[in-house]
Length: 601
Figure 1 (tube, one colour):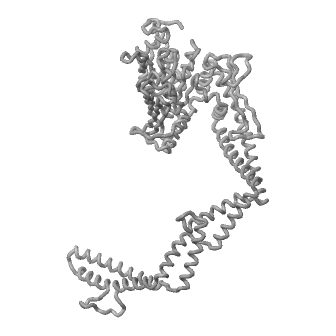
Figure 2 (cartoon, one colour):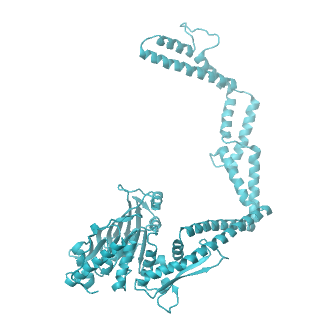
Figure 3 (cartoon, one colour):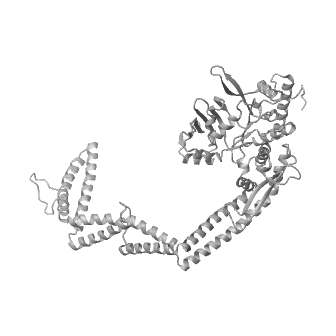
């Protein structure tokens, strides 16, 4: 593209319309001791962030740091001489994000500002630790969260696109919400069918063993039903046995207490001429105070009246207790026999300390297990019928899922093909191979799905990860992500040199598509093309500087704006940051990118 000396100035980034973060984003990233990076902190804005710099400066360490932070493999060879590398990130997420629930399950807490902090450290010996929301967690937990937070696409990281399962998942997502609902119903039906079939096979194959186990359970239930214990009955029997054994002593104690409270029925007076019972004494005291005009004494009189009521009630309960006491030896023997029978059941069928309640729990579980162990002809026939009904549902839903995939395949391939045409891959054709086997339904349907690509006319379609080079594969992934823009729940997308081997107009088209993705996602791109970098909301430059003190190369990362950004783009275009022609060309790129973004807004 020829440089022009006059061009419309780009609108400053600060004047552009603010971008929303409906899915959340990474606001801060700190990298320490990783590769050429000693210690840098990046403030990441919304929208499109590009990372540029000289070859070998350490641009890919930003991608490496992000991958490491989100549970990627720890490579001790990347750790600097300090002996430990660390990456920390701060995420802002909407309250309804499912990431919060999984983080809470792991014991994580939000930071004071409501963000979620992740951290990962790696030692030179290869030991790795992860922290989430201030809690130490297994790296696998962070990796699990990463599936809903981060997608990395680069020449060395195309796992999502190369796996047939991911290709099938992409096609299902493209097919729409109604298709996904049918797919969810299929998964439930398939799981139910497999469970019923496995249960039937187990019962048929282990009929003798299951019948013997059922006999043991039935014998235990017969013993328990013969005794018919009630919840907590053993404790109640213990209380009755003690009461019956000590009836005389208990009666004497209760009578003595009752006499002290209400006296005897003869109403004999004590030595001082006062009634011997407590209620009469309290009543006299209450009347004496109630006759006073003093408010304090009147209140105390009321308290005494309440005390009289309480004492009378206790005396009545003591009288009932004495009346209910039974010293019958026959009744005691009956209670002891009943307690012994329940104790025998507890020893055989309950855990220590569980008592009669534990016996009843064992019986309930045994009845449930008997249903599962039933190998009678009637039970097997009923189970086989349930299995066949579930299989019929699987076949019906599986056919509907397969039809939905086939209906969506052509449209998906056509849209991806149109995107590839603008990414210097006009001759490439993508398609889906869908092989269905209704006789062998799997957990995700009856289809084997593969994304195929023919790199040029006449070339046979091959699996996309075999039919595309590294740079082409990255662009195919970019095309797919653009097709799904706004529908992908992953908030952060990282593209590592997806523009490799591209130049001219195609490079500008890559920039346009990345900017389009960045409307609904936070997109981080490592690039060597000025045409791509010109579309950025945030432009980070990686500089390699010698450490004069130790003679070690170090890396610094800085954000550039205004003239500094023009100089960086000029360096990327011509190799000379101060070239007038390069700077004019850089300003033109910024103007074109700003115009394209305004038109798309």
